[in-house]
Image 1 (cartoon, one colour):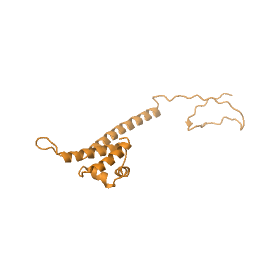
Image 2 (tube, rainbow, N blue to C red):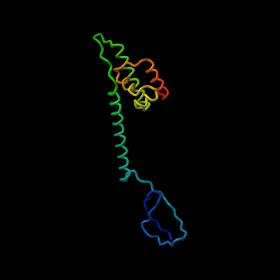
Image 3 (cartoon, rainbow, N blue to C red):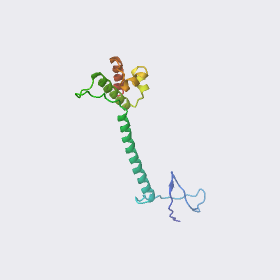
Image 4 (cartoon, rainbow, N blue to C red):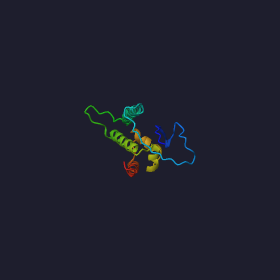
Length: 151
């Protein structure tokens, strides 16, 4: 007897919609032909729309993250009438921006940076505001920790 059935696979199982009338223990030969889903089917087009929507959302989220990261950097001090920036406040802000950027690339929190640099936990926070001037030894410890992370 040859019988053709069309069924859908659920996981690794083919569920038959009808009884084949085969006794338990009887040997049967089964051939399976996989029918590719046509591009125009409802499931395929729904999946394509979902993938496109998720890609658009990811692109928007990535842009939003870039904007937030940029906005979260401490500002440079204002220039004077001749267009010059005050040296020490500018240096503090530049160091803070570099530490923030490198710490984010390492995917570390401020607490993690403090632990790896062997400094007090509030030190990275104070440094990253750009309002506190760290000493050279502290900047060196933080730099070594970030270099060890490859950033």
